[in-house]
Length: 194
Image (tube, rainbow, N blue to C red; front, side, top):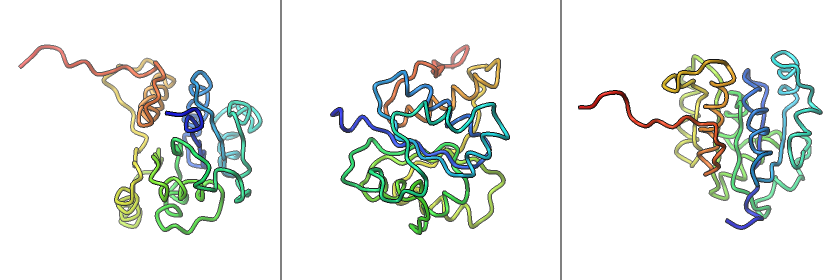
């Protein structure tokens, strides 16, 4: 992949689980991937509720930051080459905007661009339970090319902490872009045999 295409757009919405987006940025800092961050205003509020991070701390983790209201930013155009976009956590509101193509911010516009350009769009959805309208929108997204990857913890690696659970989940989300982080405990088969 060319250096120009080693860019990944990271969207962080106001859904609970903002630490997943923060950890993705931390892991990507250690890679050769240029990150373009766009955070919703609700994400900044959730950050204060759930972590000790300030918005400026999270922005400092990204290579480039974009204001959520700047719909003319580079990431709003398909001519700006990227690997795609990871939205983590992804709120139901953002997911619904993307599914309908009626975008109201740079975050959802950048996701729409990823879809129209046939680039990878991964939605780390954070909501439960889901009603029929949510499920219909998720089906639309899957049908038009998005990867719907709900935040679900894996227990086969026997996590010892919340950090272990976050790392495994974020590492698996980044796997979807072919980015190796070194934090995923890979399944190597169960004990015993058939």
